[in-house]
Every structure is written in C-alpha cells, then in structure tokens.
Amino acid sequence: MNDFGMGGDDFEQMYQEVILEASKHPHGREHFAVDLAQETAGAQTGETVVRASHEYCTPGESHQFNPTCGDEATIHVEISDSEPHAIERLVWDGHGCSISQASLSIMVDLVEGKTVDDAMELEQLFHRLMESRGKGLDNEDDEERLEDAIVFQGASKYPMRIKCALLGWEGLKDAVARALVANKS
Image (cartoon, rainbow, N blue to C red; front, side, top):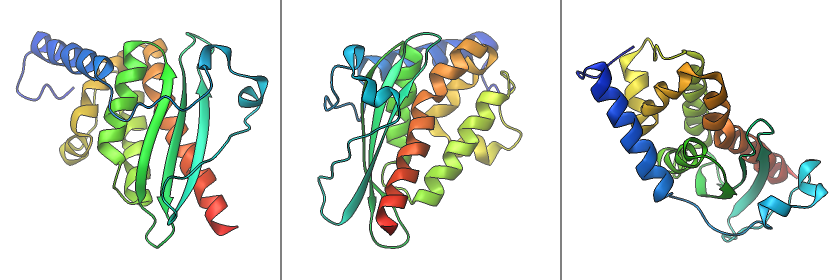
C-alpha cells in the first residue's frame, strides 16, 4: 500500500475526509431521474430514457442498483459525435451511502472532458484499485492518474464497500457504451 508519505492513520483520515466532503457536496449530481426509491419496473429491466442537451452529442444513460445495500444511481453521459469521442457532459442522480455518492462525485471530476478511451482507461484503473484489497496499484503513475479517486484504496479492503465504490463506474461504462451504439445508428 502506497501511503503517499503518510502514516496509516493519516492516510485513513485523508480517506475519510475526502469521501465525506465529496458525498456532502457531490459534483455532477442533478435531479433528472424519477424518484429512484420508487422507480418503475422499466429501469429495473434495463430500459433507459436518453436525452441530450447538446445537439452535437449523443446521449447514453444507465441505471445501476446495488441490491446488497440499496444504493442506486442513474448516470447520464453525452459523448461528442466527432472523433475522438469525448465525454462532453456527465451527470448523475441517485441515493446511497457516502462511499457510492463520493465515488460518483469524484468520477465526474476525473472523467468529464476526457476522451472516451481515456475515461475507460481510468475506469479500468479504478477497478484494479478496487481489486487490490487495500494494497493500491503497483504503478505510481497509475495512482497519480486516479487523482482523488485513490482514496478509495481504503474501501477496497472491504468487499461490501467495493460494490458501493464501483456503482457509478459501472454505470459510466454502460452509459458510454449505449451512447456509442446510438452514435453509430
């Protein structure tokens, strides 16, 4: 585990502070979905409603639900129509624990404005971080690319928290895939 020049207790304190701040003041959160606590069966079966605010973008949307803890989120992404495709807009709506909400917030800061390829590389790095079981990544450059998302290294020690941290990232991957398919239509 890379302690970034801090003792274990200091890193744990930073982890808690960043997650609490990001969950209290989430970036990219907008209220656009139906009340998620009472959402219709359509969202549970994978149907989505896509909308775009930019005419030069293709939207994609994904609803994610963690049945273990009840966290849910709808992730809306708009991908530029021109190559290389870039994430022009990324917003989400949902509810859940501080880890899922903070992960969504930090994900928005990390990938909005990036190319789809760069965003998917960051998703893979974050997934590897979550598989590390608290050890972190082997490559310091990869850890730096994750910016504030590296604080979830602490969450990766606990399997139940991993699912919470990955909720938004799985939604991002699905929403981007939907937008790219729609773009080719």
